[in-house]
Length: 448
Length: 180
Image (cartoon, rainbow over the protein chains, first blue to last red):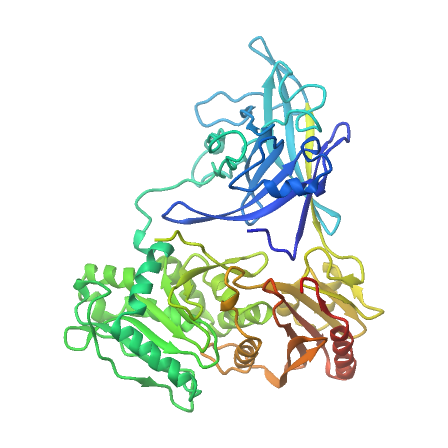
């Protein structure tokens, strides 16, 4: 999807020594990418910087180059950034073909570190190294903001990216941008943070094959920490199945009806008959909860974890004012996870609760479901909340006032929850927010 | 050694004619309106304006006499237009949140009035409220055809109330969606 239109994003590409402009800010295009590997989501900003020799004053050619495809004669650069602006890496294309990456002065531990002397050509073992410093200059409102040193690349013999025109020069052959400089890992030496960018081959090669994916060498994936039950897109199927469960559907339908006739909150516990037979099994009938007229927005749902009253896995209620889940709704799940009735049932019961609990909010336009994706992160937020609930909630209200409620909740609970909505339809989908712009958008899940 | 600089420019708005380059609305701010930079904004905050609200709009902040004007462009659910919240539901929710009629335990403002008006065939939700001596007019537009909307504030003190309301009228009269 294109980057938020509220901010126009342009770039020039300049040889700082000769002041030659190699690309025009009109010749670039920035897009927001949300990529899923089936287990998690990563957001990136992709900037395509086309070479003027490729554009040939035909700006419509820019539209031919996206993450999924590029022109057969595309020449230019593809740069990836995190949504917060950290440079991740880039690729260079010449005539539709990916240029092999030049060497970097950066090296992983144990590998040779090449010249780090900026501004000089250096001889190493009978080979002339021509090195290029890559620097991003950021401007805000046309005023210089700051520069970021992206690193140095070197090529041998003065060919390739060297040459008379300079790399990425108009009509020249671009050279591959360097890998990012990774921040030192905690507890590691500075050498261990130096990593060689390992570029992945482009899909298909040549034109129309799409761009190589972003690969953040600074991100280390650890195994054993991903709770696959909390993959948002995998949970969509479960949420959709629950939405048509007879008991759940009946409760939510009743709540939608109360919205039309009452300003008091109404709700139901969702109590499984047996917790070890799965989330989509039989639910016990639960009494209707109604807020009092003196506190019309407060329900205090009971929590039970026994065979007589059932196993409270979820809670559904309406919000007559139309807002999504409140911080208090979200913390309700954390409180329940520490309820003695649950904890005394053993670790398996707690694990089941944590993997399957949710809170549903029914409004006149759509339903929301919130689940916890990181219980430790939620605990940290809860501690902050307990220190000063008014301050915590004021932040949500202020952000909601400035933008919208979904953005405010997603921002306040970033990394701790997943927020879904059904938009008044039969299907739920996860929501995400771009923090810099407060734009809320739907996470596109693969079709089942 | 060759040095290459990527010059990355965030183009914003230095002209009084707004609504260019991807903005949702096109409109002209009344004469005498000046754009604020961060030091100027901080100076105003030290003089009693509400920091937490104004700083959320730092890309579009203006001043005229005793008024601070700020806004931002928003979009919601761009892939599913049918799932957008109506202006009425947005208005109802925001009035509830501001006035403490929700589950949240934040500070309670006093909502003086709220209404939906139509100007130049564009519907706007207007909420006037105050918190202690900070007064606000909140303006939220309906969606344009692409799901974009504008959400802005005029912040003022009680003696400037008439000027704030006139300023609102002046802006709304010349607001036009760029994409419709």
